[in-house]
Image 1 (spheres, helix red, strand yellow):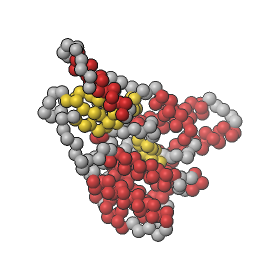
Image 2 (cartoon, rainbow, N blue to C red):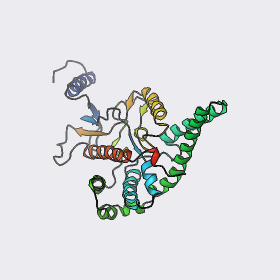
Image 3 (spheres, rainbow, N blue to C red):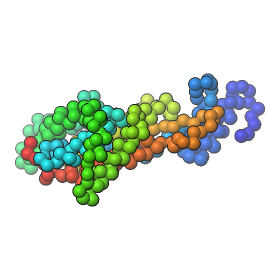
Image 4 (cartoon, one colour):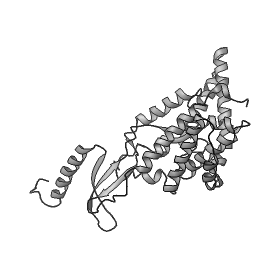
Length: 297
């Protein structure tokens, strides 16, 4: 580190600037900062951020709703229920039917647009049929949300998670995928029984002066479907709102220079495993998310 002839405290600031520049050159997700720990008021540290690459982690629930309403689908319904319960109750993934949630607001906005278009009195039959389809989708989505939310909020499912997962026995290759996914979720829960995603987020450490930021409860959530009649409009709305946000609240890890690192601790082990499992869960649910499979509402 180069010497400086600047007076105090400018010398400290200049040295920190040079250290921050070198740390950032190693990895742009590393941020050199002066923080306060339990023993000292000022400690040089490196704050690491988990790069999410502006991805959205939304879990579609329509396939699960169909299973829950279909005779003979009790095994997969129960398995997905305990996974949903873990993600909602422990990880704190918000559900679209919760009042005030980000996705609830998006769906409310879509419903307002439909109502406004209907008020315009368009007489085109094709347009009217499309609006009716959208209204039916909204009705089914709201009805399903009202049933699903109290189920995945019930703590009984967390207590039953281990039993449900180990009792699930695959009968074919596709069921094996579900079984392995559920086992990995269970292992994550066992290793981090109280860890939530908000626990991993520390907005005050990285870009603390930015008021406009994409929050964790905005880029994660349970939503209705990846393939319904609102998908394009919904994603356009979300992307437009996020374009105005210069910062995304990503998980962080802090290393203090005056403390030896714990060789047993792996940075972002929880986050790496969680986001990977959520993506696999979404992909498996998408395989069964088809409108032609819908039961009559």
